[in-house]
Amino acid sequence: MTRTASKTGSQTMPEKVTVDLGDRAYEIFVGQGLIENAAMYVAPLLKRARVTIVTDENVAQLHLDALQKSFTDNNITSTPFILPPGEKTKNFEQLQHLLGALLDAGVERGDLIIALGGGVIGDLTGFAASVLRRGVDFAQIPTTLLAQVDSSVGGKTGINVPQGKNLIGAFHQPRLVLADTDALTTLPPRQFRAGYAEVVKYGLINDPSFFDWLEANLDNTMNGDVATITKAIVTSCDAKAHVVAADEREGGVRALLNLGHTFGHALEAATGFSDRLIHGEGVAIGMTMAFELSVHLGLCSGQDAVRARRHLTKAGLPTRLSDIPGNLPDARALIDLMAQDKKVVDGTLTFILARGIGDAFITRDVTPSDLLAFMTDQETT
Ligand SMILES: NC(=O)c1ccc[n+]([C@@H]2O[C@H](COP(=O)([O-])OP(=O)(O)OC[C@H]3O[C@@H](n4cnc5c(N)ncnc54)[C@H](O)[C@@H]3O)[C@@H](O)[C@H]2O)c1
Ligand SMILES: [Zn+2]
Image (cartoon, rainbow, N blue to C red; front, top):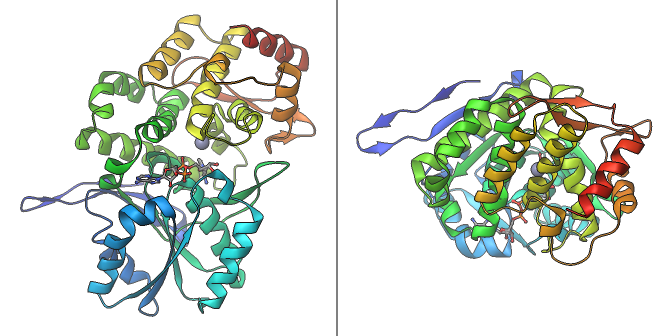
């Protein structure tokens, strides 16, 4: 992984993070103006002068014209497919619809498909690209903070099914990621905060000095200071790039990136993948619960759990079950939902716990009785 920033004249060049996967290595560019200059980055990947763009209605209204203009100005034909926004789009029906539309549009094996949007569009488009004609190339232009720091990097693609989230999918790495910080200026604040939970995750997993930095820079981040946000995104992408290069298919350390996600996914399922709780919010509650469970098991100091919760709360994120509007299923039902998570091996739940801030680890040693006692306790706090 290399990280570079350079300046030509007064124009700041984007920062660059490389995901080192041998002949499938690719670059993540982070900076301003990347959507309006996308053709410059995409053109070297094209075998013929055409691309298809998959996006959602919200993003199309705000950023599709600028992207298409960049292609038109460079004599590249672009064909957009605009899907409904929201988590419910990540399903079989939309996948089938998208694959049919891509075939009807004559997308060939050597073509490039671009995902312009948040994690929903990135995951669905990446999966479609992985199976279309047995695999075509795709590029990610993530437009949410969550997608810029997490979902656009690492090649996990997929859809949700009634049995659970992301249970059908494939590993399919993008050829390029363009994280344009200008796109974040149109993002609703709630979505920005939810993405910020994934940024905090990298500090909590294994980078205590990044967590310190995040604490010191929270106001600048939340006030939209571009330099601060760029640094947060680059550090996050760098962390993810290292983990993905070390363990692309999650045989080991990559599972650390699931900190907070076993709880979070269960809560998302319990709230019907609805606006009651969006992914990053579930992760914020889940990470706090992972720290609390670590304290409950005598593995982590209470102060560190308090510090993690305090930072997430200051960032405007929920950290308790009682922060979720409406009723939730009881402790046993939540545990059943956790058991549907794909991180189950031989029926035993895998947890990411922590010995402290920046010291997370993977364990399968949480007993069902410990978990039930902990979850019952959570219901009442
Ligand atoms: N593949 C992975 O490794 C990975 C990692 C983390 C999360 N995910 C997945 O990512 C998904 C969540 O992604 P998300 O939080 O980006 O959600 P999302 O794609 O639903 O986007 C959130 C909302 O913001 C809107 N939006 C997007 N960009 C915008 C912009 N620039 N301005 C205004 N509105 C904008 C979208 O239309 C949508 O309504 C989940 O399905 C989750 O499972 C995948
Ligand atoms: Zn996540």
